[in-house]
Length: 466
Image 1 (cartoon, helix red, strand yellow):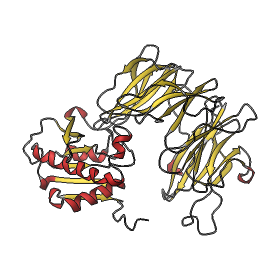
Image 2 (cartoon, rainbow, N blue to C red):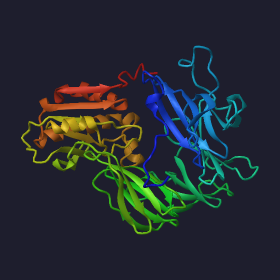
Image 3 (spheres, rainbow, N blue to C red):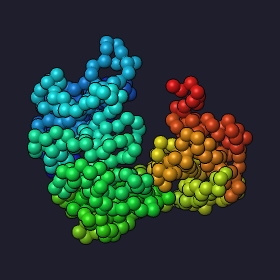
Image 4 (cartoon, one colour):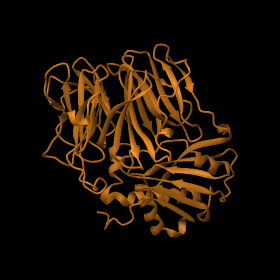
């Protein structure tokens, strides 16, 4: 009922199937708090099925939507927007190519066949479309994508009988609408700002790019922005860990929120109507905590902290910078027990990824804790190809620059040996997916440098990958 009350279970995914093969993929509570729409995944499939529960009556409704994939759930009035494909041919749901992604509106209490088609582009069958609705239900946003990042945005005023307005013109940049004031949308974007900025876009004017700059691009990457209490909360990434800053609605920096340690702000939530906001924080030695922040008093207090049988005070996290083969400075986190001796004999677990603009920031891991408790060093190298320093850092590890990624990782191991943390017989390396490719490459290039290699789900043969 309120922040102090004891919670009650609304959904328990453990009850979805006896064998545990059905999981909760996503969910969204309606704006009036009466319903929860939730998507399930069966046997790990990317296909989703959406169900709806009446929270007040604790009752599952008959609404059942299928063939949903790559979809948000965006509530509007007595229903929600979602994305799906047409029903695949019989027995081809896992082999047939997905084409013609579409956005539909589902009204509660109706059959899926009655859902209203809202947005599609038959001329571009391989593009994806995701819907979102502003908190006051005034605007519908459609995000159009054709790869893992970068998008176009379409906007529709739901209070008028308007058609969609296209805000952007190509797939060169990323746009994320975080709110609006009147007809001005507040947008987090890397449009001509590789490290991101915040702009205001007037829906009534279609002069693409001629927008009002609210928070200009800075030295550090602006990872995330939220609107709360008529203020903008920005999460910056400085050397692969986060700083949290509060700005006025006009973009003036007001103050910085003190974080508990060198770590990651994993989410920010708030409402334009409330002076209370929340943020999640984690580090290598602290599991995710939820903090409450009062924008009036500028004070933070812990709201939720998990009870974990682990004393983080016994461990230390430090950040070092080493040179890669081409003299580029690369940051690396090192986590270990306090009082560790640099005798060249410590076992090291070295992790990397280096691709797709993905940034590796401090996160808590139970398996890493077991390693630390047994005297190991956990090392995370923020190699090029990621997004730690913006798009330039990303591109320096792409395509013909991919060898930089491998050199950065190899140099991390060499640094650990040269500074007497460990030796070549005590280094285990690990990466998954694109990181699995990384481990496969460096193991072939420098087999004598690593004792153990754990490449998970790596793409190992790029010549045959397609």
